[in-house]
Image (cartoon, rainbow, N blue to C red; front, side):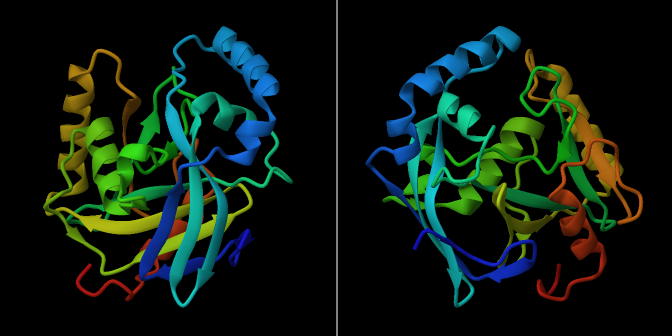
Length: 243
């Protein structure tokens, strides 16, 4: 299966069948010394980093409006080495975005905190898939989305209206799985709630909320994959009836 999916186009996705392989990822298995040496350098540059567990793909394909793939649990230090030179590694990254849509149709994103790997960058609250996001070996994308948004912003999306399907945007640097989540409050209210939550955190992961009201008025620090997603939203896609 390897990696067989269209790149740089927003794809409709009716199901995500990405399974967690209990075996080691070949990239981690074959690069132990380089991973350890690079992690030492990363820690010297940013002692706040934590070598937790994330997942890294070894295969992903798209057919019949489905994403089908295989991933492995790896240490964050493995991910940090991989992201420096991704080509030819037999590994790719997938992650999920809950596209938070306010009652006034504005999008609410976040700016990452200064101590994080993506310091100052703007995207929808998200995090890599972790083993906790899998049910009987199958990834639960919505659980990941709701968990990450809650941890970073304090907003609980479990009762929010959601798009009828996922969408995906893939490039050699990663595949993002997106779903619209709509809340009734206007963007300013949501942003105030997020700012209040961040103020209570001893070590907040994010700097604060970022409101995006138009596709032509984009914030500084926007991650590259965000622009086409924002344009898609404000183009008035009719693929999510009622949203």
